[in-house]
Length: 390
Image (cartoon, rainbow, N blue to C red; front, side, top):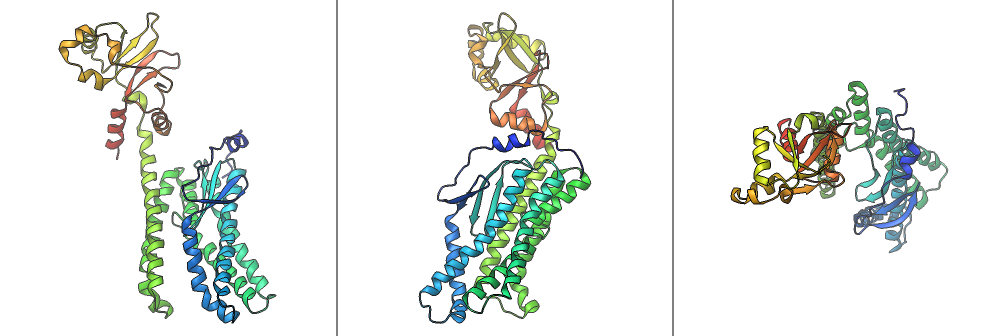
């Protein structure tokens, strides 16, 4: 846990955060620590539901409000989500202080989400970014509990107790060890710290999240026996919504962890095809003959100075009838070596996948550190190697 910071330019990483992307239909309501705060249309649904559910309690606390009862209920929802915003802002502030770029803070139907734009580099970073949100919720709940002794009965007292109960609930719930909850990230950090592998942490915390999702789905069927309170339709609907949310988030974490575990198997040097360098104006038939003779699986065209300038596209070559190949220059079925199509021969793992994703192409030229040609990497070979490790 005392490892040195591997990012000496961490402030620069924050300054170079990617531009904010605003999902269609969202509404910007402000910004915190440089991150836009967005509200999704679904938030208005939960705000209306809170206003409707709180109406009887508000009427009991302040009789005679009439239609203002629902206005007060809506205001109650705003205050509650203000506390959720504090929770998410805490994630954003700590992530930025640790050097991670943060996109938007989103408030939605099930609460909020903070878009930290890069994966944590160390277990302790994962721990602190995750734990600060629940701690803020617990602090707000504790503060509201203390203030409740000073507030009079009525609407204000109801609001303060509501803040107390909901924040304590959110704080405790988010400490439950299962992704996608903050507690799942704490579990991931713990497994990561023990095993040295963040992907195993994601898989373990994802399975814990799936168990939690099943518990949530089954809760309405057991709450009568446990609490003595029979569930109503709202309980079942909320259990399904929350359970599906937890299951999908946990499943995504498991899938991501499994994918990342296989990435080290992808080594460009091991997957490269032997290549033959030929002049660009050499007849295609002769280039193919030489490649077969040399048992090369790919062809690179070079300039008169020996500099690589193009890669023979395997698909274009196979689509060219053999009777036409003697009369065609090899350059007619090549793709020019543009930026991103030349990769270091030692590239592997996640760096390899990122390079391929950044510049999609069927083939890439692999070169040694001195610039000499090592071979050609074919994307279909990378896909086959990845699938074989599944």
